[in-house]
Amino acid sequence: MKKKYVFLEFLTIFFVLALPPLMASEGQAFDVTKGFPWTAVWQTAVALLIYWQYTVLLRQNRMPTPAFMKLSAGTMCFGGLMLVYAGIEALSIVFPSLFLFRKAMSTVPPATVPQWISFLLLLVGGAFYEEALYRVFMPEAICALLKAPALKYAAEAGVVIVFALSHRYLGTAAVVNAILCGVILRLCFRRTKSIVPGTAAHILYNFMQIVFALISVSP
Image (tube, rainbow, N blue to C red):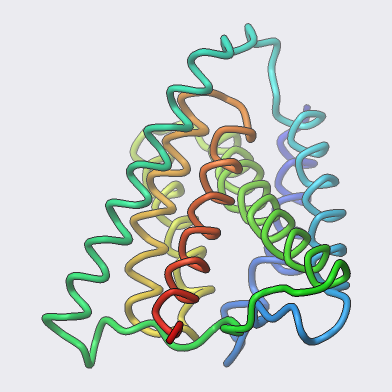
């Protein structure tokens, strides 16, 4: 595929999808009580399109990754994400003014069928969207445009920073957490060349954060 087309595709996706969150003062709250999450549906549809673009524009004829390798990589990825979470929580005890997450979700668990549907859409759709955008298309596209290894590493770091800064409305802890988790999830994709292990780990990680948040406010 011509690099010019890849470059135009990258610029379009960056300005339309990656740039707006950097300017946002607040993000979408994870709240199942606020009606149907159309944003999550939109994000899932966009993620499918982005991933399809990756397969069309950038994917070469590669041998499929064995299932056991995907399972192993996904398990290690999830373990790494939970270690990051534990580290951030520990830092929040030592430096409470710097490392506390701002509230980003409702502490009311889903109670009805529509609320459970909303919960699943927000949980799965959000993770899949971020994996397709920040772990697959953006880094793969920009690396396809560069030749020098040093520039590729710089581009990889730049995508991680963009991902992290899209969480800045949640505070310093969320930015640090996103940097570390972004690196782990990207390494998972590079190892497996599949979006599935990282997305599964991301979904489980977000789910555990929600569980811990609910436990922390339970009587």
